[in-house]
Image (cartoon, rainbow, N blue to C red):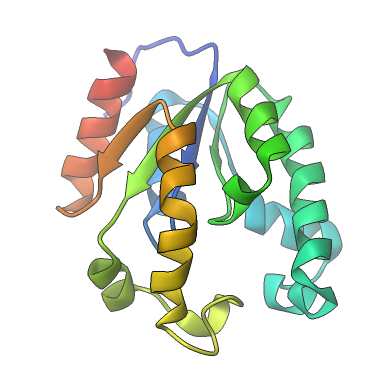
Length: 170
């Protein structure tokens, strides 16, 4: 179901790895007839390397690339953007995104994330799934602080999308 809503801002999704940012972002972009950008996918295409390969050069190097890509993509307004889970750790990223965006925190219970994700593709989780709890504690207040809207992703996909569309349109 397409929306007739005219959006003049980016719709940006933040949240933990595996919370649904990319799947939700793609569907929202489709409904709003906007371009969709996944920051991690964009970085992989731009560097011709997997995120886990980039992390071999260190998290600081990855965050630098991520910041460059966020600046570049945020210029394509309006669009829908799915950030990496750690994008909120760099305040400059969030300042760039806040300028022309509605920021939506996809809050998904950790237990649901663990049920759903493939940790082998997640560099910060590959060694120990319990690291997810540490990341959650480290980032939760950042997600809450930077978001304009918080959506709990603990129900079926369609309901979550419908709720987001209702909040955007409202």
